[in-house]
Length: 476
Image 1 (tube, rainbow, N blue to C red):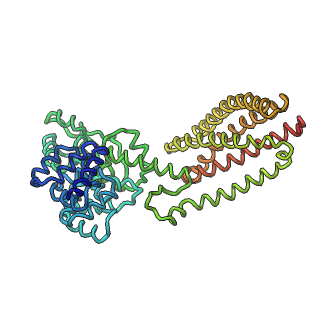
Image 2 (image 1 turned 45 degrees about the horizontal axis):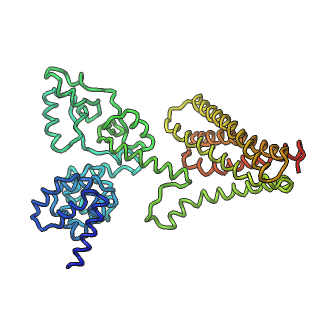
Image 3 (image 1 turned 90 degrees about the horizontal axis):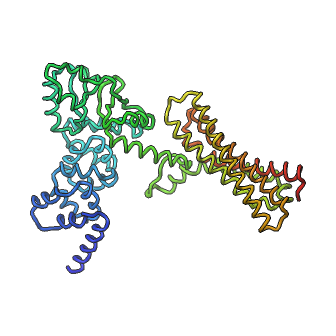
């Protein structure tokens, strides 16, 4: 018994360190008080704090916790869990409790969590919930995960365009019992086609004789459910609305996407783009099988291997230069690294700009010109610094003459200047080209630009050395 108490104390101390209120929450759940008292005490804590410590409970303690809490309380807590965790906890509940919990979740969250559990158990839970909840879950589940409809929720207030202000207030009050997104009300016609939106404040302050259409913002932004999330990101961010309606192809209101959904969509999209820039088709996780991870990485690695052989072949073409001026080999990585860095910077800027799908040809050319100008200006500065410091290094530490030292450093400075200009152009033009031929520039550009810039840097460096140092200055 003492050993168990010591373990329990250690776990509680660990939770305190990680979660702040974790020790108090766990102490409540582990107490011998009545379920009602425990639930009342848990209500004093924020749902996020409770969600953080569920994983610190044993399986039996979690089952006790599920019984203590009402479905509504569990629903609020589960909104702060990631889908995988929530799915694991849902598996531990009995079907009735799980169904009651699912009914309390926002529909998009419920669908995401249900995707994480066994198909047979998922079917049992869906069959147990109320018919209207079933329909909402099936609606959102019908969209692919990369479509904006898979992220929407039906948690919103809808009123009809032919209502009076008084009737609209009555509809608001009745729907607010089930929906808490009430800051904006959405107006539809008799066929449920979207007409516009009304700000809650405008409705509350309107006189009863004011027509509802006078309060309706008919230019309110909206998205279509079957649009790709990546294509909607800029629209969702641009308008800065806390909630945006989602329509079907017949312009009927299906649901809404909230600010939280928007943040999650942007976060997921950034993570996906980051993975693509590394040459991966999607993000990996710790539990992904080895073969699956290899399949994501291997195709680009094979392409880059072939391009790497081309780079090596080009270096081989300048074998005479390397044999006569062995010292220049020491500075090859300097040229390659700088060209790669400049190309990556231009790529990052271009990928960001390309999220705006309405760029004109003129704007794209202005982007190329700007990046080349930046590359040239930075190239002048970096080239001059390299000329001075590399020259001094060769003069002082390699025992070469001043003429030899600064001839080599001048060649390095000029190579840096030229390589940075070309790399800036390459880092901008390649993603623009892939965008033009309907290939995701984030997928194709990152690894390719790195290798192309290596090729550019090698040709520029050894070509300049061959021309200036061997053929013009005849250095040995």
